[in-house]
Image (cartoon, rainbow, N blue to C red; front, side, top):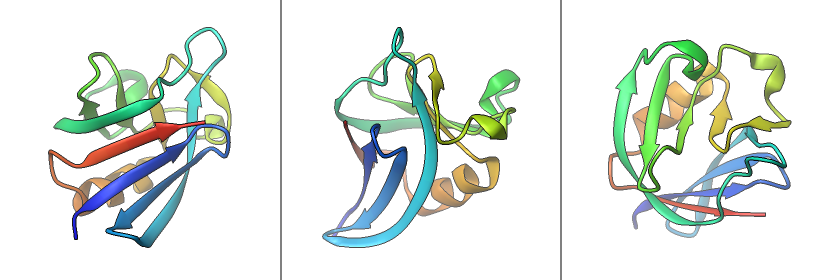
Amino acid sequence: MAKWIDVSTSKHQLKLFDGNRLFKTYPIAVGKILSPTPSGTYTIINKQRNPGGPFGVLWMGLSRPHYGIHGTNNPASIGKNVSHGCIRMFNHDVLDLSYKVPIGTRVVIHK
């Protein structure tokens, strides 16, 4: 079974599944009202270590241009609706997740 990611913007949770089995749950921050995180099904298309700025220690780009899953330079933002639409994670969590998922991993985002 392939690993895939389920993102609930209303629960501020990112869940990693292996097939139908829940593997791990992470707390996240998501887009604010004026720049919501887009619902839909995407894939991880790239990974970049130490992208700088607000992206923390790692960026994983999604197949929707300009959106991704990344770390943060503001850990107090996790659990809130504060981003420009991206999915923010604690730096140690985004590193952990990136080791577990390859490029091509499916990401399902919903409320």
